[in-house]
Image (cartoon, rainbow, N blue to C red; front, side):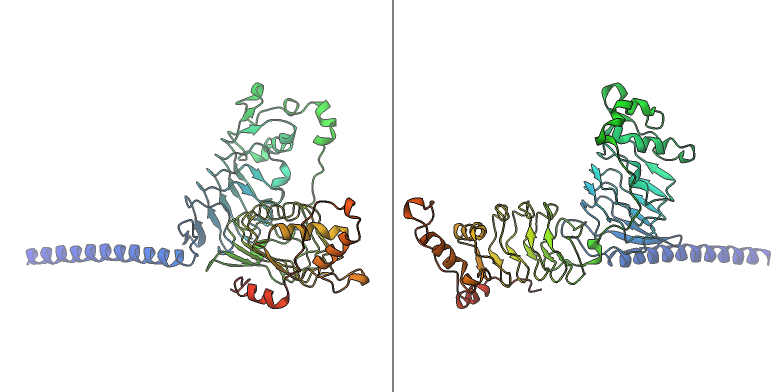
Length: 427
């Protein structure tokens, strides 16, 4: 009887072990399925693998390490607590880059190529406690960068080529506050030679900046107020297919937003309140091919506004307040194919000649709407007709070098035929 009892107990133990092993396997498989489902919610980037999103100890993580990223995707969940972006190719942290992640607690940016951090890059990160910036290319930072991270208590800055000069003084002062014992440990000067390998936590302020240097107006900086930055492109709608598109239509914008993803092909800024285009507005979106600035009330475009847009093919400037273009506005648009110019109050005087000549010398650019609206004596004329009349009034021996004949602007019927081949913003 005792032998039978022992055998039964052994069988029961083995059955219990079997159930435990099976339950562990089931839990493991279930967790893997959850991770797969979560990661599938993140849209695929054409140049990188999808990121992983998972929940651990009731906190949401985004793991985007080693994905060849150069920017923060606008479709990541806003309730992330931890963001892992190590070992990517991010070079610049722009204003508002993380502004929508209000509950973010840790941000890992180590081992990227970061060389510049704009003053409001960390705006909105009131709950951030951990920031990892080691192994990058940062040469200088000021204390104002961290004004938007009041909860920060763990900061890593080592293995950056720090230039220990006046510009670094406010950061060094902040790191040396006794209560900041976990901020900036192990970070060392790389330049100048006499300060090389000295720790930022130990260097003296007068070694960074002499009294004479401090009196230099270039080194006198006022501490900025913690005001809300201007509009962030993360509030626009992002579409991946058929081409990367950012739709910022009717967002009450007063200027071109910052933090536009650099791989955007189409950008729709129509029906906003952008009154002027400043220099290098689009320098970070060099892949852009279609730009819609319709219905903004634009009255002035800086000659360098479109600098860097060498791939732009279609530009819509219709229904604005443009009277002419300054010399140089269109010079970077080497591959432009279509230019919309309708419903602008074009003024037919000498200042309109640049736009007309540029279009004549770039005969492959199809355009419309270049019609005089002022002064009254030329109202309704095509700009081509006005330019011909301008030179007809000059004595022949005073004429500058210009084409012997001027073709009339394309009439509406011809433009409609061209338009069939160049459908703008059809998505």
